[in-house]
Length: 280
Image (tube, rainbow, N blue to C red; front, side, top):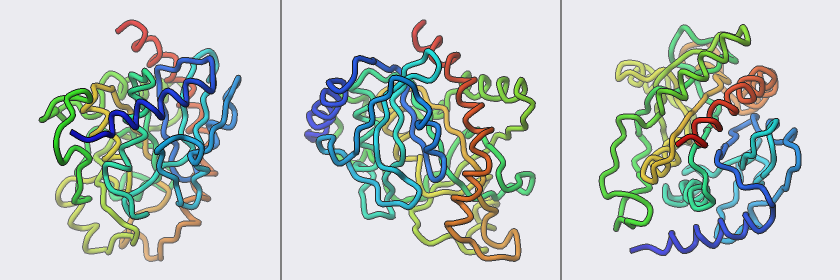
């Protein structure tokens, strides 16, 4: 049995010692999307380097700090940036912050990411609520001896992305007058972007978007019984769809351009998820 549980308990205890807030909702803010946490009130900001056993993000566009504060009246714990397999981390290390969230008492997890659009209905800057995923990263954070204190040996993934939360997000986007799509996310290890042939393959097997994150966190969250909402920002169209090269600056620039819509959607859906968690 691993000692991840002990390490997660220690990190969670440290974070809770830094603030009087006791959030039930955790957020992971991906490339170019971390600005949501800048506007939290009553906020405590803790660099990942200060959190025991916590992996440190090296990706551009990831601030690398935990912000515990309030969005309106809803207390949340928000990660400004995550770690990825392409940085050299294992799936277990990428999922560790999710374990910490659960030990803090988090019951719902909102994940965001920057993704490449495969579905031709999407345009650059589209927001997509994930309905499912295809794990092509070649790793799973649940490999190895199972720690029953986290969850069961064989967790069910039928509702990896919690349908009621997806419906909340779509309803709130309509109220805001914004179009939000739904789609299936394919996770690859990276760090190279996909080839045009790989994108044709991904479309054939049913992927609408492609990215390099999110899936390890979802697997760990569902293992521990957390409900998940995931929203992708289509920051670029995937290889071969447009006759142009892909670069990371485009990813960051598009995230900056759509952050207003993104933040508005998060702020609208958070009170509804908070009400669901409190009633559970």
